[in-house]
Image 1 (cartoon, rainbow, N blue to C red):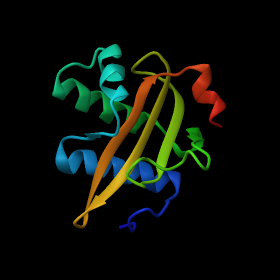
Image 2: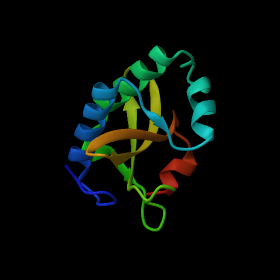
Image 3: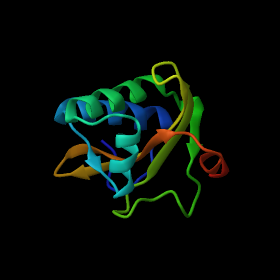
Image 4: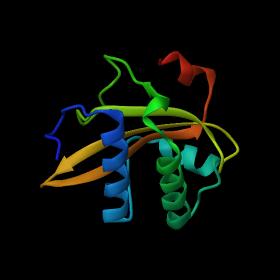
Length: 126
């Protein structure tokens, strides 16, 4: 397990995010905009959202890590952020996913900060 606030490599972050999603069957919303982004992806019901995030986590790979770069690499709660840009086979478009891993009482939680079709703004983070 990674101590609070400590960064990990991309492969470990993806693995921990998958494990957290599977263990809790849910994810936390890291900000207000994520709700609209999920709606825009037509992920309305909790089950659809879970499946969409699960698919994304299974499609991304460490080589598609986009950032973010300091000082924008930490979420509001102080957790490191991990952002990925990839051509999604399932969503049939280039996607952008940003998440954090939150450690609470020895458990890891997935915190979603962004999940949408990629834009030029996303690529500027690199």
